Amino acid sequence: MKKRILSLALIAVLAMMLIPCAQASWTMYVSPAKGTTVNLRSTPQIVKGDKNVITKIPYGTALTVKYVSNGWACIDYGVGSYDEAYMMVKYLTYEYVAPTAANMRVNTNNADTSNPKPASSSSSGSKDLSTHFKNMNEQFRSFRRVASSFTIYVKPERATGWVNFRYAPDEKAELVRQVRLNEQFIVIGETARWYQVQDPNTGIIGYISRFYVSTNPN
Image (tube, rainbow, N blue to C red):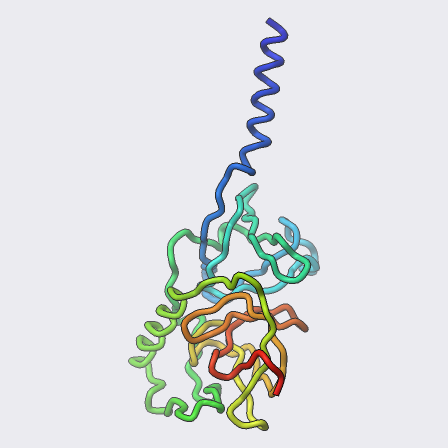
């Protein structure tokens, strides 16, 4: 009887050990309440001073989740030296999330100067926001991760110009910063018109228009 109990206990333990391996990965979307960014961490815990924060992931980004444990989602990351990373599961959703006003700042001063047809001030009213939401929505829906990351170089229309590095794939999305000729970024995903990139110097992830970059330095 004792041997049978031990055998059953051993089987139960082995089954529990095999569960994570048997789970298939799935897609979830970053969806913080404020609609901006969420910390991606190297370990499943909040460390004082955020010393384990790898980068900040923009609202709406599709992530591949390997498993969830104790309120943390293990993310199939594969960038730099991190094969896996962690995010609090409360900031993720199974449903596709469309952009909201929280992560949109209408400001024509932030329009891409490399764009030959920048948006005019008359198109930046509240009615025009719905158009930008629709455009960003379409870009998020076309998002996919690249099979292998690669390096791109910024290529503004004019050598003295700049290109905008944004938190989301739309010309009116919040600006991370303006980038100059030949600045390098690592491509980790793409949409129909944008690359999702990581700044190798800061680790920040955002989007750059595919029309103003090159795989070769200029």
